[in-house]
Image (cartoon, rainbow, N blue to C red; front, side, top):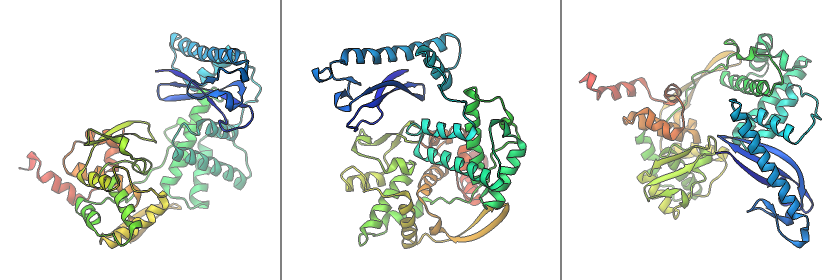
Length: 409
């Protein structure tokens, strides 16, 4: 459902600040400057209009202009739909510019300038991790230009650039193959968005050869026996590790990302037997049965969660927890880095991270015979092929799973 709303650029400012129009349609949001300014002390954030006060005598005209803005964006939205077109951020903003009779004051941006603008536009709308990945990709593009003493623009993004850029990332920076693939994936996002806005006509980035390289990584999961060892281990002498362990177990039995399982509260518990939460990354709402271990932990903390810590610090403590709980075994990890396949042997507990929780949830449910499509409702995977790549089970575990299938009986 399409909806217009208004927010102040700097709501805590002591002086006049801009009023922004936010227009939500589908799963997208457009942020648009109304050009109106107001002192926050005269702003009613609940009604999203100026306060009706004698101290701000022009409030009737001010609110009327905001009403006009809301009506214009709704009219622009309806016009695009009536014209039989798909509503995009670009064509909606273009219709609004026409409605407000704005003139293009800015010159057409180059590729790097557009990426910077795009990151600013999407900050706060897309997940924080996505924004960081975009900024990281931009930094690598800038560093590439410095290293090669060259300039790049929309028309330069072809196979010659692709080969040169990936070679730079692999040979000069010694990056892993999946890291290189992420840079290419985000470059394709930038090029696609710019193309949609009419900033270029170069479609070579859509070539089958202009690919995001991927490599199957040796990520681990913890089986139910290992999780039980961690859950039942006595950490009472070290409250820090006990809290981290409890957080980790919540992640292992909900399948939520770190950004979500560290934000659970009483309000997320429904009917005393389910968790309902809107995920930060995808904005999807998921409902998860309440596992007995999770129930015990939440009751222990009065139906909230242990005080969360940073992802990095939690990853450090999880190694200590895994070692203390005797998560044994040696794991061979293979990774292509700098164009060379490198293999290393690690103790399994040294590979435990916050993301191990999510993989453990999916893998254990899959081994338990829960249909993939059911698990995907929680993990958020859109295709079964992407979900199955996420599952981490050994050939022997897969064979044991098949032993109970009617085909083998």
